[in-house]
Image 1 (cartoon, rainbow, N blue to C red):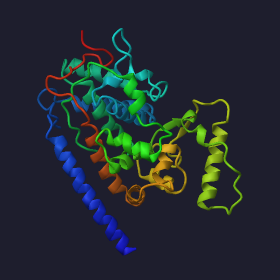
Image 2 (image 1 turned 90 degrees about the vertical axis):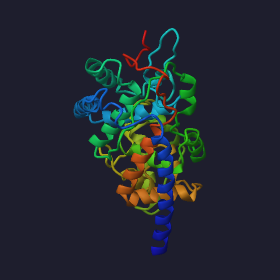
Image 3 (image 1 turned 45 degrees about the vertical axis):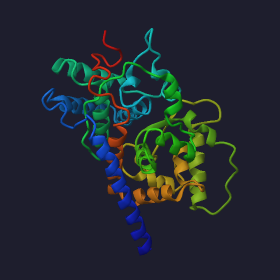
Image 4 (image 1 turned 135 degrees about the vertical axis):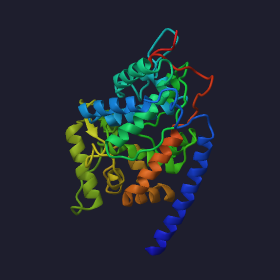
Length: 337
């Protein structure tokens, strides 16, 4: 057992070094945690206060606000293309299958943008707002904090086609997930760490109903892994019947759905992963490195928090627009006239 611990510790030391190498590349870009220090000194405080007020009114908004940043960064990069509404020239990414009737929290972003325009006109980008909001939402639910690197510009376009293609689907296999994350410059550690965002939030029945039915009745010993999986599946079937209730909501983490912690990984190891993409991380065909990371995060919440923060910084640097690229939108839903 001690040899195994030493082996895992060595592997994760190497992983941390690799992550730091990647992060140095991110820090070499034009993004900086001090970007608004003189341009708009109260920018992060204005964001924090409004996120805090919104999450206080509706604790479930924390997961929704975090999700906006994910769904933005995986399409064209972290450029607020997700926030654009339909116009004559633009088909909104909000109409894509992974986003339609699924994303929310846009009004919170609108409110923050309005206040920032009052304080510092045409200064703070919508893309940066999404990045700060994601961090603050996690912190408010008990998760880790991190320095948000700022200075992004907003996109002049949107892509509903890429939204349908690049945002990970809830029924994705591990192979597809790895490829999907790799296309964004994210590795297996990032995949497992960022999947931990499912420790908060809810999912619609339609996202996992396909895997609930057609299963044989369980007749084995109680309290085994198979028994827990069977009873878990039965409870989900009661909420999500074969026909109807497609939009009924179920917590992604049935144990601590409003607290950002490492319970998600403990659930996976107990056969209590809600989505196919969750269960893929611990399936029988899973790569050894993936299951080792899941075990490590299940045993060490501090390690999960550290890696999650690093992966969020790394994700926030995907194909960012800086300098003279893009624009700082006056309203996040529309391009400047």
